[in-house]
Image (tube, rainbow, N blue to C red; front, top):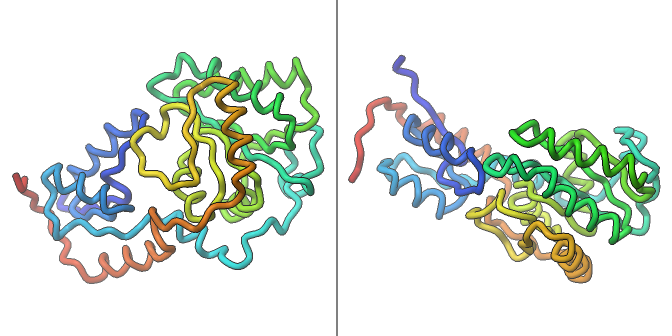
Length: 267
């Protein structure tokens, strides 16, 4: 078709099936906009020309950087987004949970989320819990949440489907800790300095900042890590995944770089 292809965030390593697709798109692409230097090195090792690999940072960090100076929670999440549950008070601090099924471990999704639910229930801190992505295993995660909610009717947890990106980042910024396995804990939270408890294998291989503590799928480990992270408090800003100017860098390259469609391996 002779249409040049640009790929954003290639060269990253994760613990999910996305990796097959990501690396396949790298080989289809003509220009590569990577988030980190390590990701760029991986793209080059796949046979891509170094002159076509640009370390731009992650575009989602641009949104986080845009909140600098006014990132604190400035809205009532219950009034704006509703949510399901009896929690309506956040003044004394709160947790945010976002746990997705691991596509390569989808048959264990319910078991995994039950460990987290039991840990959060025992911690008994106000918690805003977000529903999982619609990935393989999401039924197991969702059914686990529903059955737990119906059995225990936790008073300190409210469940949400989604939020606007800037609202969600404000919610994270003002939280005590993010718990789960979302990439937002690895990327945006490193820039915002939010403590993170990363559970399981979904983010295995991703570069991470000092704000992340990794644990297995066990209630006891999750509880211990949450208590550790809430004691630690906020972390310094880490620009591992960018400084908030990825969009500018990408647009500049697209405007100036020659758009070529012929490719050859460099090894």
